Amino acid sequence: MPPALSRPDAWPLYFPPARAEAEAMNADARGADAPRSPAPEAPPAEAAAPNWQRTLFLMIGIQLGMNMGFTVLSPVMPLFLPELGVRGEAAVNMWAGVLSTVTPLVAAFASPLWGRVADRRGRKLMVLRSCFAIALFIGLMSLAANVWQFMGLRALMGVFAGFNAATISLVASQVPPNRLGYSLGWLSTGQLVGTLIGPLLGGFVADVTGSYRMPFVFTSGICALCGVLALVLVKERFSPPKAGASKASLLQSFAILARSPGLLPLFVVLLLAQFGVQAVQPVVTLYVQQLAGPVPALATLGGLAFSVTGVADLIASPFLGRRSDVLGYRRVLLIALGGAALASAPQAFVPDYWSFVAARFALGLFIGGILPTANALVGRLAPAGDRGSVYGVTASAMFLGQSLGPLSGGAIAATLGLNWVFLVTAVLLAANLAWVWAKVPEVR
Image (tube, one colour):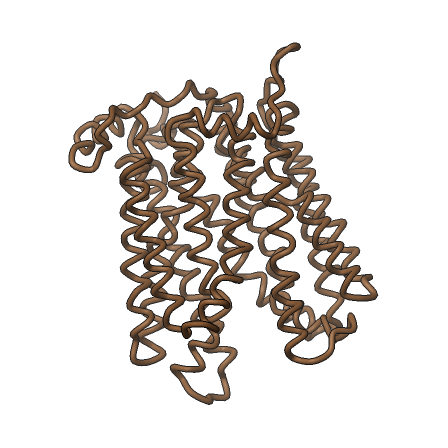
């Protein structure tokens, strides 16, 4: 008889209860908060790959490395702009905003196309395409002679971006359906750890080398290494569509969302969630300055206000992802959206800096449950053969929110004041909760 720990169900700290238990708990829980219409059956899912755990943890590591590479450039890019001919504080601020927006904006239009390719050629291929293309274009950015060349390379990177969507699609196609929330929760954790480490590493590389171009070279190397690891170590079980199978167009990819119960509402959920989270990014440091006054360590205090949300997200994402496999994805998504709305509103009225930090930490605990559970719902509701297309389209929603959120947050702050950005974010999250309650079904 094999030892007890050879069964995944015997690992309570890492895996949720067995599927039968999860379904029983869902049946008991689906009363007060279930939609009035019967919960739809999820489309037939692809069977889990035999090596799904190995694939999952490899992709968590690659996700960490790629997102670390993305954010290495965050503290460096505004300081690099004067070397590209940008003069004056106002011009630097303007170009920093434009350059931060152009990549996700272009990626929003490119992602559905890559999603269709993933369904026909395989999801691993899309991970490799993204890793090596991003490595190439970031490496070329280190050679840019002016800001227009730099912006062109940022736009080209957006065309070939979509790494996170490709990773989610790959993992969702390999793991068992009743481990999807758990898997995407850990994938989100890898992404978050990378984004926490990246800015610190970027500033360190720039300071040690004395060059603002070297972080781009360093980032290019990290992304290329991640691509090599994915190429050599990650195995995908993929069955190409049969000859003569329909090859849906971009418009048909959106039609898949429209005709699949719950998917179109989730497009809106992901857009609003990303928009609300990103809207506060341009004003956090300014708000810290308003609360703390003229202190010498303003940059450090601002960084702490950013990082504490990420730390809380890091703590909560695996737990909420694991619980969503048991309690139901829709229920955990409602809890996460409600908690995030309640944690956002008080930030507009905090009396001092440390109260603001505490509210940001509380926000992170709930933010950590939004994207993993929403993406798990997408994976369970999407037809198995069109999962790459669906994740490509929903990635467009996140890219749009990522690009439009900071612009809107800055405009709200300039028009109404810094406090209003947090109130508007709370209203958006509350509206998102109402939308999920009314439109998004729980799957069986």
